Length: 101
Image (cartoon, rainbow, N blue to C red; front, side):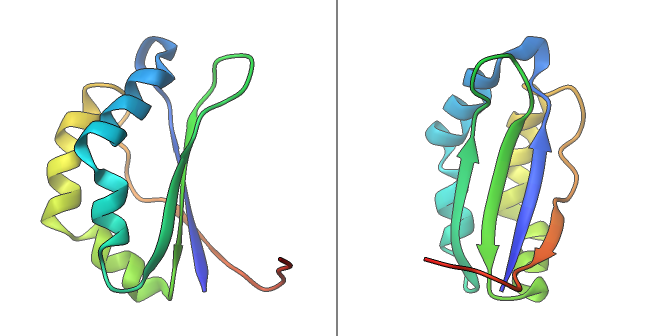
């Protein structure tokens, strides 16, 4: 399994607007509906303003790449780009090698 990690810098520090857009548009639900996505989350910073963190768990890099190339993701990106300081790009991928539950 792998985890994708994506930091989004909200325009004018308005992280709540980014979270509301994700909720309204269902972008994480669209990602989770893809074969190979095991779950996705958006996290907001506590306390001081900072970047929004979006993470997802994927079966493998190919599953994540399917999302990156998805026209559904691209459609969400247009709305998101109005709320962040830079284009979202691709997330960093991490291989999960040790875990506990």
